[in-house]
Structure formats: C-alpha cells, structure tokens
Length: 150
Image (cartoon, rainbow, N blue to C red; front, side):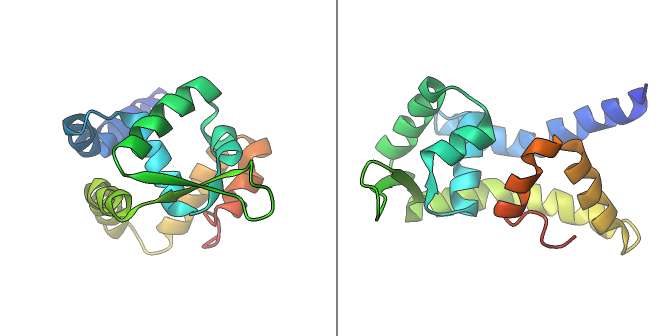
C-alpha cells in the first residue's frame, strides 16, 4: 500500500482547502459552495444537470447549496436559449470576485510547489491527477478544458 502517498495526499489536501475554508465559513458557506463556485466560474452557462454529474451529489443537496448562493447574490440561473426548462448557471460579479479570493491562496500554493520542481514535472502532476480520476469521468475533464495542457 502506498501509505506514504496517501498520507501526503491527505496533508496536501488539508492545507490546500484550509485557507478557503476559513473564508467560506465567514460567509456561512462550506466546501460544497466552493465546489459549485469553482465549476460555475470554470464553465459559465453550465447546466444544473452537468453540475450534478460532476459533483455526484443529490439534487436535494445541490438545490440547498445553489439556493444559498443565488439568494446571497453569488450565482444566477438563466433559462436555456433552446429549452426554457433548462437552468444555466452563471457567477455574478460578486461570485467571480469571491471565487478569485478563494482561489488566490490555492493558486499560490500550487504555483510554489510546481516552481520547486523540475520544469517538466508540472505535466507529470497533471497526468497523475488525470489518472486518479475514474476513466468514465475523463471525458468530462476534456469538456471542462482541464486536460488541454497534456
């Protein structure tokens, strides 16, 4: 068992989310709110159905989180242009700004770690994460443009 890698992964993730968790808590939000903000900022106009597929949470859980983000002015829903029943999600200016603040320390942490490694290592890190994802979900990585540097 790769217990060392498992432990390192735990500590890296703990520190990666720590700063954002504190900012989220001040707004009365949690990690689920951060995930929604991340994906809606990553892919403006994402459907609720796509978000459910990505997050693998129940409709009820997503509805609660989305309602809070909408009610607080971070996300807006618009009907689809072809199908008015479709709900497309967009970050508001407030949502884009809050996401930028949440992401700042995470980006700084990733950039510092990558900068400390040989230049070709960044692609290996990306490949490692792609291979950690279930193969059935890998097309979604392409759809979200997360694999374009590979």
